[in-house]
Image (cartoon, rainbow, N blue to C red):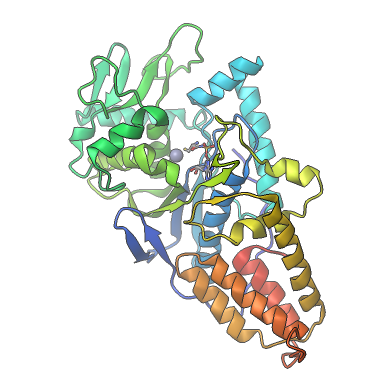
Length: 411
Ligand code: 5CA
Ligand code: ZN
């Protein structure tokens, strides 16, 4: 599919430090060491509803990584998928009485507009599952060839016991896995499975359900194998970062990693990075619960997209947080103060702020610390202490470029 237009990315006068991120698998910070272009796969939307603030927060988080790599001098190959073949999409389409492809196309288009408004750098590849069906089917057949797939009725399952490293990505115990599997698309109780945790890779056609023609007959792929196939095809094995929200740690990223590892014998990704969950009205914002704040609804009420973005950035990407309108108003005030400081032209020296911001972002994407450094610069420039500092004649221009390049906040 086509992605969305790229915003300008100012080139900074200094090179940012190497990027360290928190890796779920090892439980600590790891330095990314891209060999050639940095390779990033972030799990994309299931396009049955509009982009909510939880999605936006996850994509802003990985946009910080994308920018941190670019500012450190790396090319980036970014892949983000669209899960346009999956149960939640079919169910919503049937409920509202519209064709599932039409619903997916409509919501994907709205998502593109939201991402462009938030100044998210677009992925180089934005594959849908349907258009990638041949790759997915090919991967399933390769899994069959190495004997790690078995049949239950006419459906196909991946055998998790085939992968000695199963569990290494999440680090979860079997009990922890079993506790959430059914709620996250798994079917632990299906008769005929060898292990309750085995995951569906192919679902044969059922009467009344959407099905696609393929070399495996009519049916549709399971969710995890879709991402595995798209990631391996577009990025290859051992790519730098697999990203998504913490709701994808298990089973999604565990299954993707296992399916790839049994085939290639190599690690799937070198780091698994997860963004915290955004809540609203006391619960995780989710399409199934309906407690949603939509990016498009805020945009339609003339909220500055940069204020939406700043509201997200005020939280460390790994923390769970709750959206409140008060935070949006605070971000609007903060942007106003930054704009006034930039308008001075001269200002407090920008060079130390450039270093502080780039270092904060290279240290596990610490946007709150970066924002604190910008606030301190704005205070010094506007003279909240009574003594305005205008010793750097280029400060405004330097800070404007920094805010845009590092934080994606264009003022
Ligand atoms: N299509 C799959 C991934 S292959 C999927 O999870 N789609 S989604 O539309 O449900 O979510 C899209 C992305 O937003 C995922 O990376 C998910 O982890 C993230 N996400 C979903 N809800 C939230 C939330 N409340 N807070 C933060 N991130 C969220
Ligand atoms: Zn995915």
